[in-house]
Length: 456
Image (tube, rainbow, N blue to C red; front, side):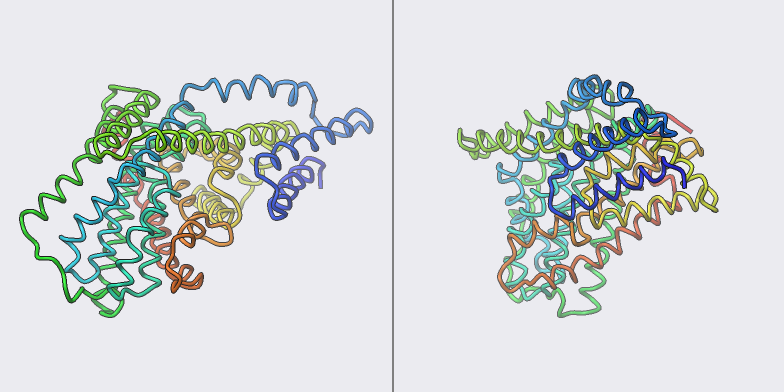
């Protein structure tokens, strides 16, 4: 075997080993990059190894590459969207939605779980932060569902899985990062937001259909409550008043992007200001809340940018050692056509989700496979949406399924880890079914972007 493939495989193997040993992702990426850069330099300079690696061509240009990341105007949208989500979490909107919808849907069999899905979709379109959505949905819904004698796995699986829609339904932080990493105007943030909208809502509809069918086939899984409040005009008015504020914010953010009124960065500022205003109007805004929200925003942003910088070092050295050529040859050398290669990439992405977070996969794997896929004539938005659905499953697949950890922290004592794993399995299957539908019916991801932005 030639030297380049060996070094590339060694880099990935070392990264996985450090992750399993518990090293922070950003430090592992940057550290492995620098170690293999030094190794490549020594092999070329001291042993005349057959490598095209040059120290100045990789490490020497890192300062310019890192500055390009932090100076990228699109990245300003990240902390603003994060702040919007955290501030909405503090504003009490989700509690109002949950209580209002329960009065309307609670009397139905499976009504509590359906309410969780609807609230989860609105949270996803308002916040885009999976951790906040999962924790909030768990805190608001698990207690009432347990009191209503819901099956424990169904209750916790619904709250946990619906919370992950925030990574797919726009405005999504993941889609912002993906648009930046794919490096093509054919997959801009606006187009990815439009492309992911129908699949995201489709997944929510599939969740509701699953809950309805299951609750009717197995009446003890999600029974209708014996005692409930009478549905009247006041209850319907409460739902309307609870839904209007987040809908206005969603339309302000997404509408300004879709209709060309504002760029993604400007729209994120609109969202942050709107969330601040909603917290103020709901009388939840004070100095302590503002301080905590700014702290959490800074912490999350620093975490993402730390991985960004580490991934830049890793990717620069990987390319310097011939990683692009190795990966391109490995993909194009597969004994399949374009369809088979796409399925292989998505399958590998799904498997990586068991061990890596979506941030690492987006920053490391996506820039390596996207150019190869695009050179084969694959539609960028379609590929990006399928890749995003694959990454959504990474929140639910152990051992590194972060949504599982989030929900465990707010579960009642009677819900065990086994209940959580059993609860999310059907929803992982539904996500994979949704991925299959988008794969076989490309217009699910491409029709809306083409209608809004023009295309074939």
